[in-house]
Image 1 (cartoon, rainbow, N blue to C red):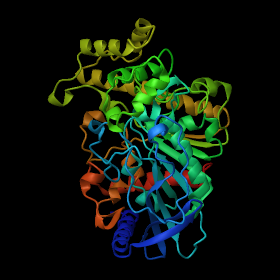
Image 2: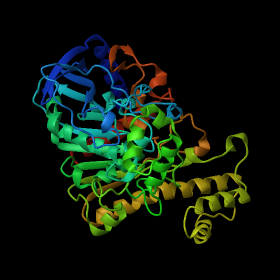
Image 3: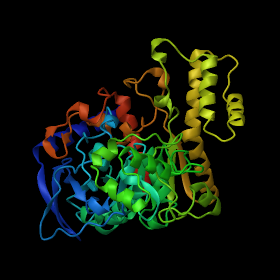
Image 4: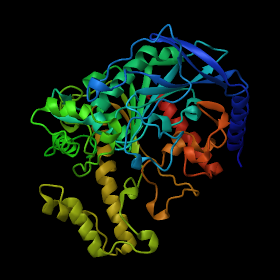
Length: 512
């Protein structure tokens, strides 16, 4: 074991020892009122970590506020807000609950879900220190997930304030009737309001409002990227990190010939709410339970969820590719963006683990099915089969080729194109590929490095094992709460240290 790894392990042992023994309550004053959270000692040098959980940034989006723009939270003063436990996660299909989490379980759903969590370092010897802020926007196909599942305790110890948030999902977050009754993009507008709340209040938590980085993965990366094109988001951040998802991804936003209203009508029909007027339809849907709406399955167009971002003329005025071509986007940012090699491996239907791969005929059928989504499907099918071929292909190679094609189309090429466009326009841009696979990784080897693989290292999962749980700092987190990989090597910890340092280094100095 080298010295740096040994020092790292000793450092985290110290964190665990003092966090368990010295947790106390702490209060801060915001423009809305006082907020009470936890303070835990993170080492012996006077450095503390403050944790505030379940802070509401908007009024509950219930009743007439369902399908509407979010409304900012009214002050709670003189009452002290006890931010000691996570708020509810936004309604979503329970069948979509992930088999792992990067922090805590999030299976408590309620329409009153617009909360954020803050993990803030504090140096008692320099109490006026203002840290850069990293705001995490979770992924989940715009239909599942929660800010609760991403634990910011380890990452924040790199000298940044980490904020995680919830935003409305699925139909509750993106339904549109293509008129003023339900304009869509409610989930993105939730994110805007959360970013505005952070601008107004984060300095009370030791953050520097002028040094905000927004980062997210998958649909979270798509959201982060879309904010760079929105006039509503200007001035709310100075740097962005879209991971494994960006505004050019085919699933990031509705594109012709598809319309989200088609799927809104289908939802209304399934819930016996289809009327000739949008106002009657929306009124009926507002009388349904939030969970019933979330659990009603609607199959969307190819490569995109039924309820996802759309061009609404308000949050975003045109398709990202058109705005990019016109130069109509936020140029006053720095960009760190990238992907993993096998983004689509977990989407591949296969019984390869049982010894059966893809035959040549099966490969052509899959390619043909994939190409059928395009209007010129025959030409696309021919071009794809020409590009993704191998004269020596066997069953394993056909599987690899299909996985490569899907990863290129859905993730990798959009990131490369966007990074190139940004760089050509003079926007400081870094393009990365995360290419590390742990020897303890539980997925089969043929899958390689899959979608979300970097998140374990970004949030410091190799150091979680005995950290005290937020919301109950005297108890340790059950392992099943935070990850489905429970063994970590010295190399895993070293990679995690590097990734956390690189990401936070970018947040501290976006020009690096």
